[in-house]
Amino acid sequence: MQAAAVQSLHQQAGGSVIRIIQKLDVHVVRVDTAGMARVMATYRASPLVEFVEHDTYVYATANPNDSLYNLQWHYPAIQLPAAWDVVTGPNCVIVAVLDTGIRPHPDLTWVAGHDFFADDVDPFDPGCFSDPTGFSHGMHISGTIAALTNNALGVAGVNWGGVQIMPLRVLGESGSTCGVGTASMVADALRHATDNGAKVANMSFAGPASATLEIGVNYAYSRGVTLVAAAGNENSNIDDPADPNDPGSYPAGYSNVIAVGATNCNNARASYSNFGTQLDLMAPGGDFVDCPGGLSPEEILSTSWSPNGGNGYYPGKGTSFSAPHVSGLAVLLIARGIVGPANIQNRLQSTATNLGPPGWDPLHGWGLVNAAAAVGP
Image (cartoon, rainbow, N blue to C red; front, side):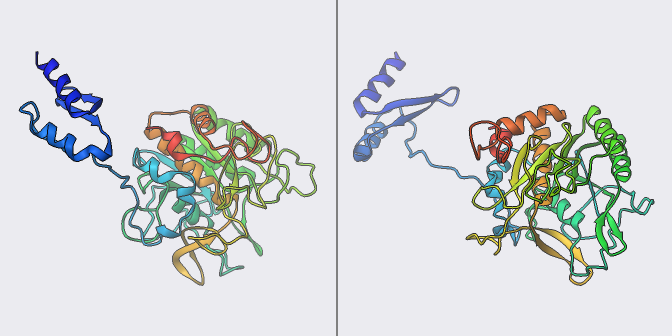
């Protein structure tokens, strides 16, 4: 009887029911804007109605208050703020950052790591005194993945600061060369990361093919570690080690590693980014152009330190800085229950935004990672 009376009231008022929220006894009704006042008055006059109100919009709130976040153009480019509305990084997941090491910074925290370059237990980054203006590569990578977020300081991290970084130093200064290591150091670091609970490993470096390195890659992959690497910055084919323009692009060239190329602020392939059949995904890395609303020229801003500048926030460009976007996103997928390197890679690829022909292509892989699509609603 009451249901018939309610239906009659809707007809009298001219409202079209689009949703009934069961157990709350709420009817959501669409009406003609021009007759809004009359319709609401009709509903209010009925003893069947407890209240009438306009349905209101709600807005995403996951925009962090970090003081330099407005310069991080690269996060909106991959739809990361919308993903943050769904999930942020769980503090139980460990990401191994195989790089130059780490040192104290107010926007970074980490768990115990190891130094394979100096062969000790302290992954402290001493800096590169051949280039005292150069910033710590490892700290920059770590910040993109896991800088403390919404703390009114510096930059935000892909994981909202909720992930545990395991710093593994495999790169250092040799003679007058900065940022150099060996394949055996990397292989040993992958073994260490795997045996000590890392679920993701970021490798923002490249070199020639190595049987030792491949063994380390396969060891980690077979035990559930998602491996991410920079595709390289030579604008050359990462699949052709005989290419005289390519100094080597491994571990990215191995099939068990997610090879990440770089995009600019226009979501186009960066001018330097490597390509080829082993390329899997693209992520922001900056380029040699100016873009509105960000750094000029556009670069990726993150935590770091240099001998001359001390602690701070430093801009950089390259596929090195693309890879940690993907490593961080892999952790968000783990938090959503998508686990295992194959499943994570498939999800990232299937939800990526196409940048070239439909599907995969050698210049863009499967496209630009889309954080919101990857984590889902």
